[in-house]
Length: 307
Ligand code: PSU
Ligand code: MN
Image 1: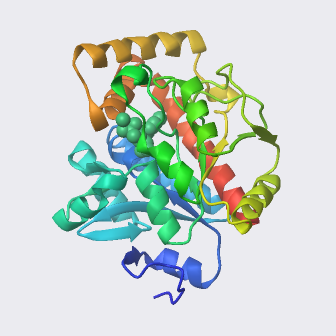
Image 2: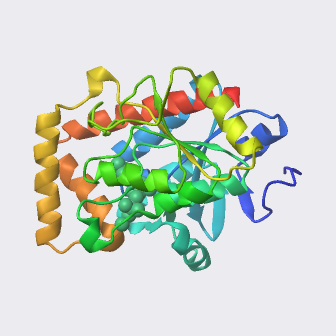
């Protein structure tokens, strides 16, 4: 096992991750809520394994993070990914507040962006790839529904590569929140903040950067200065895999209306919307979703190599 003092002793590192640490290899953290609550079985398992393979092909080691059997796991093996993916919605969606409870209950805990950032930081891993982050929901001025992901980005020094955020959220308010809490938004080869299924949102990123090297330099600079907190790297879905904006917007409107009619609240909101969008598009949105995650894994690995 690793002797690195910067890594918390209560973590369970997989053999791969312990070896990567010993050998100073670049590591990319990956979340597990996307597996259990973001995609249906068995596509979720297939995708999680493809994401891991993509990180490896791009020269880094993947560390999928989850709670299992009362352990905080950094790095899952294939059997564990299968186990978690098959559990699906039976796993608990774990954000910051849930970590100690689910750990003591020894249940399957699928970590959100927020919880994955916390564990990654404990493991001294500072780059993380996902699909989309949580944010300020539409109508948040009434519901107060703002994802804990944003507050985690404010505090925890992990850079998150995402394809922006879905327009189930209020993207303008999400960017305002990020600005208030000092979280820089970098557009990878774009000036525009991408909206997950589409490359455009009509909103601007703070800084455009065109190479993993440039991004790594700014991350190093920020953290060396002692400026704690995250960075959001927005990587638009590849053109060929983007959805038509008009089509996906209408589907999102319908899903939002259904959530409202059915009184969906709290942590159920995002998983409900994700699964309705997928059903309403008859799986078409899932293809974009998978491709953009792979694209983010690729970029995150390349940044990790430069860090
Ligand atoms: N957005 C997506 N896909 C996801 C999620 C969000 O496009 O899978 C998941 C992530 O795990 C994210 C979480 O951290 O939902 C946010 O949930 P909430 O909005 O309840 O904070
Ligand atoms: Mn919420």
